[in-house]
Structures are given as structure tokens and as C-alpha cells.
Image (cartoon, rainbow, N blue to C red; front, side, top):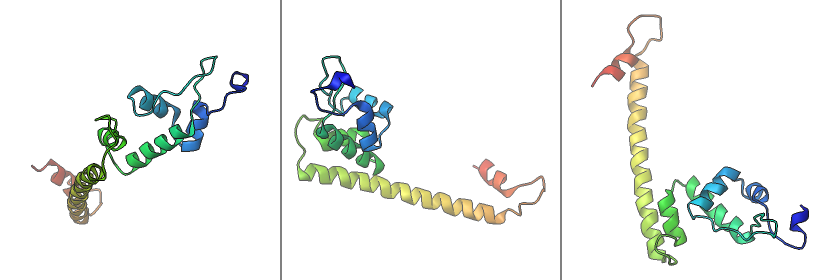
Length: 138
């Protein structure tokens, strides 16, 4: 890393290791404007700062919680160019929570149908199968 002598910062690989994020994902976040372009060395190598680590960890955690990229943009203040208020963050979070709860209900219905259908199946080698019949039913 002789290109980096006298310059402090993290390489993209360092950033990936520090955050547990894939290098390609870091590139993607840079391309879509979620992660600001870092300064470069005289040799053109990117040098990421602690602010990049913090932002990338925020993005990763928000993604783990199921927030969409557009919602994360809003949480970061990227879509309106201003820092969101607590009310804005709460509104986005409550909408996301409602979506999560709806998906949970959908999954519970799916679980019930699958459990009922599996219970009807003997699992033997008969040519007829209630699982396939249920899937084929409209």
C-alpha cells in the first residue's frame, strides 16, 4: 500500500471487512448515491473515512430490518436533500411496520394451508396426492 503513505483512510476492502458488507454491494451503494464518493489518493485509490463506515452500517441495519432503498434514502435525507425530522422517521417506520405485519399475516395463512394439506397426505407411493390436488385447485 505504498500509494497510501501519508494518507489515512480505508480501502474498499477494509471498508467491506469493517462493515461485513460485500465489495460489490459497496460499489452498488456508491453508484446509486447511497454512499458518497470517497476522496482518492494521488494514485486514484479510494480512501474511505469513518463516516463511510457509519453510513454503511446504518444502510445494512436498515436493510436487515427490511426497509426498502427508497425508505433508507428518506431516512438518510437523500430524497429531499434535508435531514428528516423525527416525525418523518416515525411515519416511515410505522408504514414499514404495517407492511411487515401484513406479510406476517400472509405467512400465517400460508403456514395454516400447508400444515392442513400436509396432514392430509399419507406420504405413501399412491399416484394421487392431496398436496398436488390442493396446489392444482383454484
